[in-house]
Structures are given as structure tokens and as C-alpha cells.
Length: 378
Image 1 (cartoon, rainbow, N blue to C red):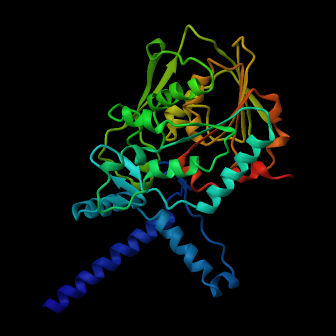
Image 2 (cartoon, helix red, strand yellow):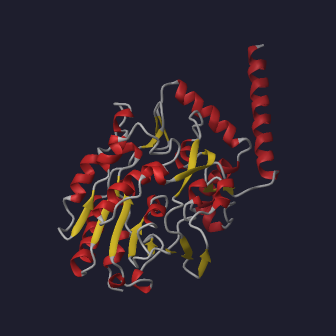
Image 3 (cartoon, one colour):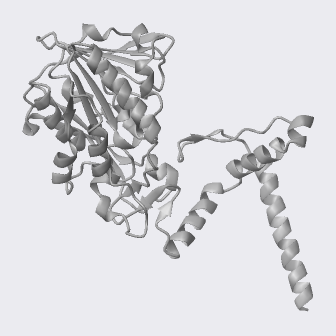
């Protein structure tokens, strides 16, 4: 009797698995996961060589995994099981009581050294004032919220070590202290790796003082809660859905200057827009891209500010919610993303600008191998 029961159970299990596999193959496919914000595997190319070197089977397993029927639901069950057993890390994301934070990877010290040397070269070879702002991520500000048994980088210490390597010709901007002082406010998203507009404002208020301006007072801004259903990169990585959704805010200073044009070069052509806010992204998964759109090689912002000052920024995406505050102080702001550029000199001449700002979060800066390209003589 027990033998028959085992046999029937095995047959039923086999039927279920074959049915799920069949459904996986015959149902319509999508090749982008909106919830995970990533491309899904395509069916591998079948060839004798791919079969012999096992490439086909490896890619086929990935394809099957990515398109498995009810895959997200199965992942949810797996996540809940792991959490029940006490696990606090999911795919490089730590789960704390109040937020998701990254498990910051070990710094690439060689890449950081090359980035610092490249920035020093710019500062030492030009008369244009150069500024460096390396922002902590939420993992640095909320370092004490990560469980003691889980490894985490001390970002304060790392920032100090990097700043000590910069040239004396560079004005260093420390926003760690300011952000840590207001850590109980909503300065970082709970489900995403970026700072919020409030976090960006606090960093801006410290930064522009160093750059010779008086920051616009916080109470002068009208704040629009543009969206309250934002689940960002940390959610996409971990699929942990027990935290409150994030809010996308837009700050406007109606008494101040206005943006007169936004010019985005995507590497092939330049397109003109009338606003720094791209509200169509509020209806998409990537809601943070409401700020200046998605990452592009070059963005130029023109304003009606009367001072005719021009700012050049080398940046990562932390700059996107930060730059709107700077529009009150510059007639022109150009942002360059070296992840999508080789020779930046084809786009700008540093000597044409009044100031140069390097703005990166420390996690990106500790890994990025593209910043060094600014020192290349092409």
C-alpha cells in the first residue's frame, strides 16, 4: 500500500511538473520583467557547438527559470520561507525594520585610485574650480540598523579615506554629517537606493554654500506629492513587499528662476524638452526617472538666471533629484555620465565653465571604472 502511495505521488508530481513546463513553453512570452526591472533570458541559439560546450543547456536552464509559469509567485513563497527561518538578506539587500538597504560590495580600490587620480588631473591642469561630493547611501547613514551578524562597509571611514587622496586644488563637500543629523526624516527611499528630494535638498543646502551661493530656504518650496506608489531598485532585487511604498516629490520655487530648455543627447541625437520633470515615468515602474529622465550621456539645462554662470557636473543618478535645486543658481548646467561616454571633450570644454562638480554616491564611486576615462588623451 505504501509503495502504491509513493508511486501515485511520484506520478502526480511528474504530471504537475510536465504540465507547468508545457504551459511555460506555450504561453505568450514577455522579455522584460517590470517588477524586477530587468531583461529576461531569450531562447538560446541551437547549434552543434553550443550543445557540445554546454552553452545551450546553461542558457536553456536560465530561459526556463526566467519564464517558469507563476515564477514570481514561487519566488514569493521561497522568500517568505527564508524570512520565516530568520534570513535577513535577499540578493544583496538587507531587510531592516524600517527600510531595505544595500549590502555594499567590497570597494574596488584600484578603480577608486584611478578615479581619484583622474579627477586630480582635471583639478591640477585647469583654472576652473573643481568640487567633489561623494554622497553616502542609506546603508551608510543607517549603518546601525543592519544586523550585527551581517557584514557592512563603514561608509564614513571609506569617505574619509577617499577624500584624503584628493588634490588640495579640489574643494571637498561633506554631506554625511548633515544627512546623519536629519536621519530621522524621510531622506532616503525605503525601497530604492536613491536619496529622496528631501535628502537631496539637505545635501544641496550644504553644497551651494561651499560653491559660493546662498541656498533657497526650504519653506519657499511648494512640494507636490506626485506619486505614492514607488517600489524601486531594492524591491526589484529582493521582491520584499512588506514595507510601505515610497513617495515621489517634486519641489518648485515659484518665486525663483525658470528652466527654459532641457537638451538631452542620447549618443546619436539631441532632443529638446521644456521641463526637467518627465511625468510619464510616474505611470511606470522606474518612477525615479521623473527627475531628468533615464541616464543619458549628456544633459544640458538652460535657465533664465541672470548671472550667466555655467556648471559642469560629472555624475551618477544621485544628481538627478539634486540638480533641480541648482537651477536657481546657474544659467546653464551640463551633466555628463561617463558610463555612456568615452571622450567627454567631444561634448564640452571645461574652460567654458565657471565650476566643475563631481557628484557620485560612494557605493557607485567605489566600483565605477568609467570615471578614469576623463584623464585619457584620446
